[in-house]
Length: 296
Length: 104
Image (cartoon, rainbow over all chains, first blue to last red):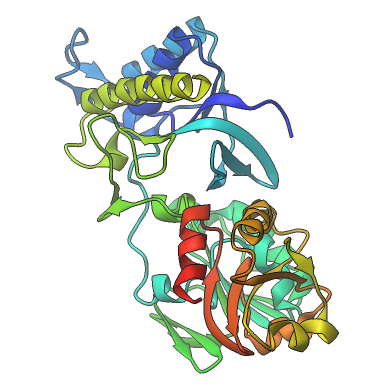
């Protein structure tokens, strides 16, 4: 395992960028994880009217300023997806693909892009519903599985699962343009994979089997894999206390897990760029105090 | 005390009497690797209250299948041979400890 960073920041919207800047000013080692193009939600905004000092700025321009600010301070963006964050006691372990990175503190600033779970999804998570094909594939040797993939990159996981499972049904639910480009026969080399085009609606358990109800009928199988772009914060960080769909924080942006802070839209409304940037600043300063308190 | 690695033939003996905590895991499972040191600590702190075991699901697919394990880490508490409760997935130490104590 490599060096432990002081502060790992997940998310490159206003909250994450602001936290990274403040943490760097305070001389802490920072790992900023997220999209290298920074947050979609910023660059796609038409005009932002209430960001002090930058009247009527477009989202694209604000994103450029953010990128420029990070560059000037030599803060790189690590463009990799964090699948899980484990509270290990006096540090955190971040799972990035199959690697682990250690951080003394974590600031969650991932926004609120996650959708609502399907009816029956939460109750059956770990009991037939999984979010990670590479993690649980080996448990499906000689069995059947249904995979719902939200982006073409999940096709690699389908191949991996199909090496273990007897039969895999793949349901791609991509964005419109990606679906149009999708070939009819995605897996010519994997005769045990069947691609179906339908919309999943709900999940149920039927004795030892799972049932995925879709707009084109119900599918009975052994397990259902849901491979989404982002998962809700409670699933990203096991043990994290939520307040509805948001992460519960106090005025210091501290969560129920010591050393883990949250900032931006993930903590709740109002969803405003300037509020997110402010919370990122508070979260970074709180993380700095927490790190200093550990050294006493 | 520490976590004792067991295989299928030893399983029934391990859970027969008292409280046994069994961690079903695999070498390729990231969350399992994170949970292992937590269980190791708890096995020391809870010595005398519960016995701790670890079982690789790849080496022992029969036992894993008998409990319908679809996802790991899967930590089960057994009381006098009967499964009392299960905890699926990684949880931080205080929550895992509370889960075991609830089932003592």
